[in-house]
Length: 240
Image (cartoon, rainbow, N blue to C red):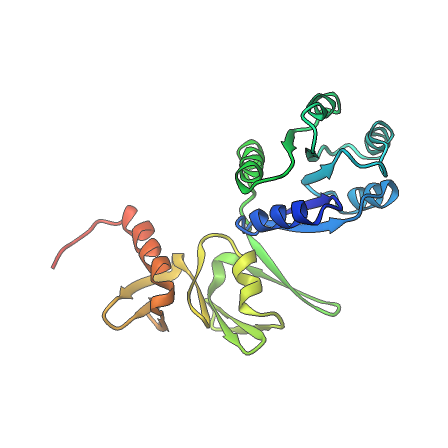
């Protein structure tokens, strides 16, 4: 998971950035106010990989802020400067920021910036998922998850070894967190496409590991078609 931090009090700009971030399943985001002490503490504590920051802010002395950051941490986040003035682009270059976006922001410019980061760093492939309940941390190998099933406000993970593990979060939460090899095919099901052994369009079911029948609905038929295309790419097609 890649952490993205937004430092801006412009509500419209923040909402636009958040909307685009939600299209990247590998990204999680948080928003903090324009305050030098709060910003520095948050960055040093959480070490976000991507930081959108309003360089028009009167609450942050950027030379001092960046100097302190370099003094106490060796990591280098992907800084994206936000400003209403084109002249501030030179300042962002001087601060050695990775990108500059002119306000008012639009989705395309933000998307390009995130793709620029993605191309440069490549999001790490998730290998495990942690289910946390109070002080209990349970780690599941991604490849061992067959499918997820919604149960009211909880989610059941069905594992390759037959275990069923309950998580106290909704299916929607995991839909946004899991890697792209997991797709929703029903309001109650997300499946691991690597575990599919059959797709039966006539009966509207997917068979997982030659055993589990998982229904799909027309609402998610686009995902079914996508799964079929991905699987066919590396398959010898035999016509009966």
